[in-house]
Amino acid sequence: MDLNVFAFVSIILAFSAFIKVFFGVFYHEQLYDWAKKHYSQEKWSTPVKGLLIYAVALFLLVWYATLTGYIAYGWILTVFITLASLKTVTLLFNWKHTSRKFAAFIDKSGKKLWFVDLFVAVIGFLFLWLGLRVY
Image (cartoon, rainbow, N blue to C red; front, top):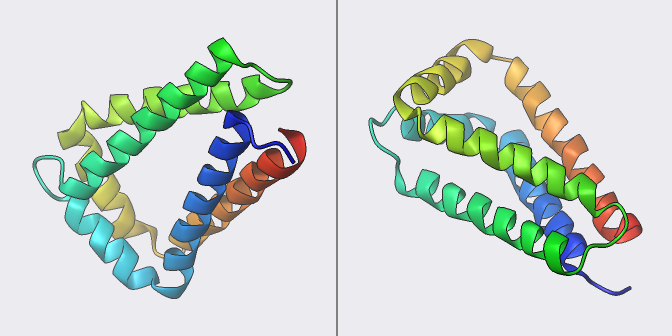
């Protein structure tokens, strides 16, 4: 298997999703208490800044690969990363509104958070399949 940038980013996204699912399933209360703590802050916390750097790095990496070494079906990852990055930037630059909304979601969601974890697991397997079979 030749590991190109699209496969590499897909596998990174899959493992990121699996890490989130692991903590969401086995440390559910702690994870969402931790998330709520960071969403309740007036300014971006260090983990939020780290996630922003992670998102920007993946965006730049995927667009670099798209412009310099495009492969079949690379558009799937390029479109996904671009839309996710735009949404991330929009949320972060409207932090006060977003953070209150996310903290309220965590407080009121109860069992819906388990569906979030399930959805993230499905997305993780999709990225793993893209990374291992498609790219």
